Image 1 (cartoon, rainbow over the protein chains, first blue to last red):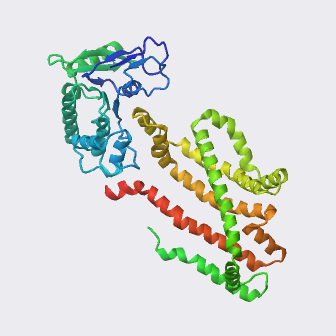
Image 2 (image 1 turned 30 degrees about the horizontal axis):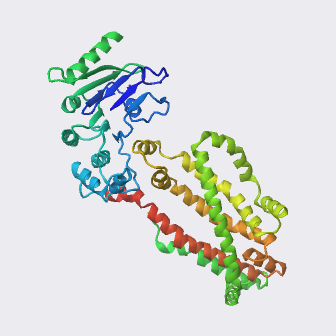
Image 3 (image 1 turned 90 degrees about the horizontal axis):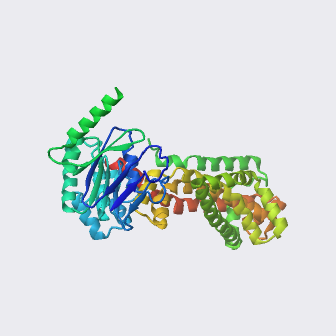
Length: 224
Length: 253
């Protein structure tokens, strides 16, 4: 449903190198890599937020709906949660449904700043879901949550993915355990400019933890 | 700590008492006491003359204000968002910011005659640069993260202006409005004094010719009262309503 071809377009991108990827419906991708390597940049590029990118570098279905959960909630702080959801085009039924989905029913009339970090992130997730996205982009969804809240959110996302099997997901994380829990495909981004050192499906005999461990080890021996 | 409500009502009555005492001691027609000014005010109001001229001036203030705000906001947002527009227009903006109000008024009267359009245009030209400079600061500080959010979720231009930009620009618009109202009505008086035959400025002109200080004070105080009323009835409630979200997190969490 979405293709990114950075190699055909010989443009000098400061952060990202040659990256050619295709995302299909039902893909559950976790994107790992050292911090500062450009994981968020890649996610933004896939969301069409990179103004330097020439047309044609991204090929996607015209009506592709993208739900993006940023690191910050990025809800409009001067609008209630319900208004925020309605603004992205959610019908009242969709608002109610997605608020129930993320376990926030009853909080529709709250302002984003009245919610805790974890609740605000779930409200932002509700906004992603309210548009019934084909592609769900998650940027460090478990960062700055305590272990219990992080676990809750992880189970919630897994449940949502299972409920919408056609929806594709790309989740940036720094923890390979998240990938083993959520993903069926692993991307490992490293290098400068950054390239995908690994793009493969995850199976029980090849866990994200062992793959990323090996990749890190290789990187270390190369530098030595 | 928030000061008690009565603290707002200390200096004004004190000034009034000081004025009354000074007028009593000096006992001259050039400084009438508050009572005399008040009587003049009532008399002018009863004859309908005050209401007429107040209305005329208020109309000019409102027309110029709306025009100046619309033009200034468009210009300010454009210059704040586009580096090219800013580079092109900034020298002009500085020029007009520093052009004395009096020069603009005189030139427009000379070129277009002593007509209403020239009067309003003179006020607008004086005010637009101030609005543009204030709003430009606001447009520059628009949150880029929310811009990204609006792009991902395909906000329409209208949604972007009303729901994303508007609330962020609101404090700057308020600052421009406050400063605008105060500046505009003062310039309107000069415009009226120089080239119109009605309005508070014209009345002040007449009073000046016969050194009628009571009338001068009565007319200007009447207009100060009107502006104060606008502040209390329109601006402050609007501001409270629009800023409610800022304190929401503090009171709850």
